[in-house]
Length: 276
Image 1 (cartoon, rainbow, N blue to C red):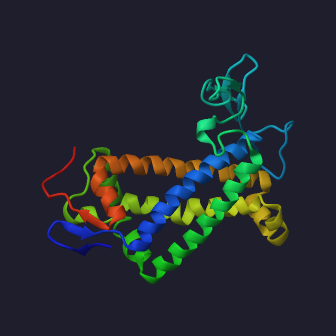
Image 2: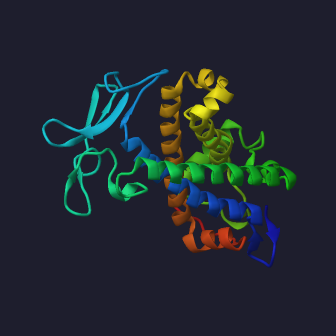
Image 3: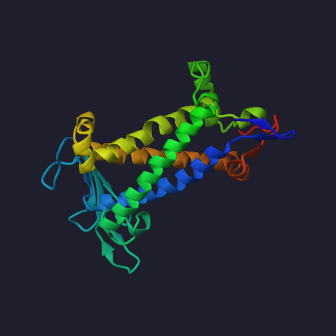
């Protein structure tokens, strides 16, 4: 991953990694926002093969009889969300009682058909782009050299030290800053080999045409409603990863980090420049 350019500079990200990163950033955000609009059509989640208005959901978002908005989890935890989720004001000043507000969805106006078109188009972009990245990373050994943690890095003492360094905002310096640390590697592995494949497979499980071709997916995930719940949870797991990723980029130095993901070149912090 790291090739020397001049003292203090490393070639940190190969071109396929940079292309996939930015394509993925656009794709994931459009998928998340169009997915929220699709969720608005039936803002409840169930486990099992079937779920409808009279079944008990494990999650629901909507208005309250008293005129507010709330999130209900397992029919036991009630979280007031008036003004944000369940009941909010649109661009025209009108009160709406859908789960997610207009600024978080694509399209911003209610349109299940429009959201599905956006979602399906960018789902295929995610699949095709991810496949190209996966094959390229196998050929250039990006996964093996840069992403997969070594046995040494997975030892408890190394992981614990990395956790303590992150907690103290003690970021890597020198050449070490040009390599992924163990926590980064575990996070990327969980996303590339866990969350994204789970999102794709559960998404396919909800499509009737794939149910007819691959009914094994329904058995694998325990039914279409369970697949929908897992799809929702994996999407928000990916959102949590993005938030942490952006925070770490800001803490590590956004200009240097952005430059490395645009040009590939990364300026290594001096050895004596520690944070925290």
